Length: 194
Image 1 (cartoon, rainbow, N blue to C red):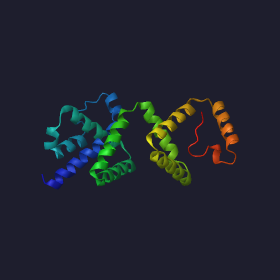
Image 2 (image 1 turned 90 degrees about the vertical axis):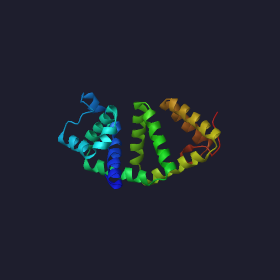
Image 3 (image 1 turned 135 degrees about the horizontal axis):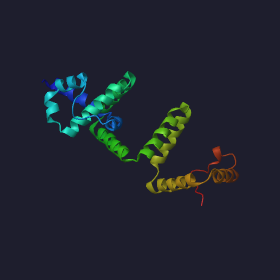
Image 4 (image 1 turned 30 degrees about the vertical axis):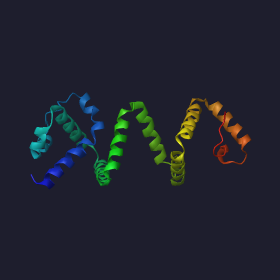
């Protein structure tokens, strides 16, 4: 097999592997994951016999699960996955490592936390462009703060999250009284409530 053919084979396998996170339903159905079942799966294995033979049974099962999931994806989702893969491949090696590290962290999160983050991201995507830009600007400002100040803000945020809606409303009213005319009643930069 030529270098270009081998590279295409590896890219195909990697793209298939990119949808691994969605393979749980197939395991739940009890499919024999290591054996190709459909003609398309057998054709996939026949196209790359050397690579297939080097895989462990667990890896073979994962490749087939990913392939099955890939086949169930809408064409637009496949196209998006391929574009994401091409973008990933165009990154410098250190950025690819950062992406892989972030993916590893994501997979370590509990399912409930991942769902919360997905909902927050979906909410963010539906905001008007001006609000999205404002949030991104604030996030970048947050990232520029010294670590101690970021930790302080995070503790304040956690306290805010633990407040009841009534307590939050009281805090907003207190802020508006302390800082009349300031947008949203927020204190000036650097001011901290006790």
